[in-house]
Image (cartoon, rainbow, N blue to C red):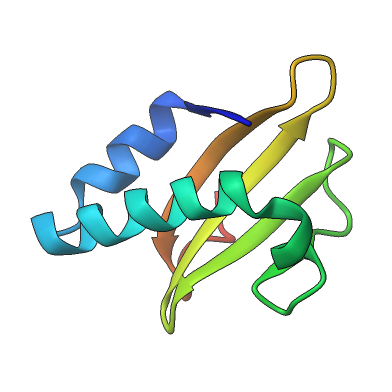
Length: 91
């Protein structure tokens, strides 16, 4: 599965420390390789009430979440947002 990052997610990533960024990127690559298995666990949950279908949340660490969308025609994991649990679901 290809991975693409939105401009917003790149800005979000820059707010983290270097070790956290490394962990997040590794986990995103792990997600792209193991999406179907993770989808069955509590680590990946489909979001309800979103403007797009197939939008998900991935739990990277206790307080870090990645919001992403699967684009069918190319099977692309599009990372929308990366952030702390308390602020990720806002704007």
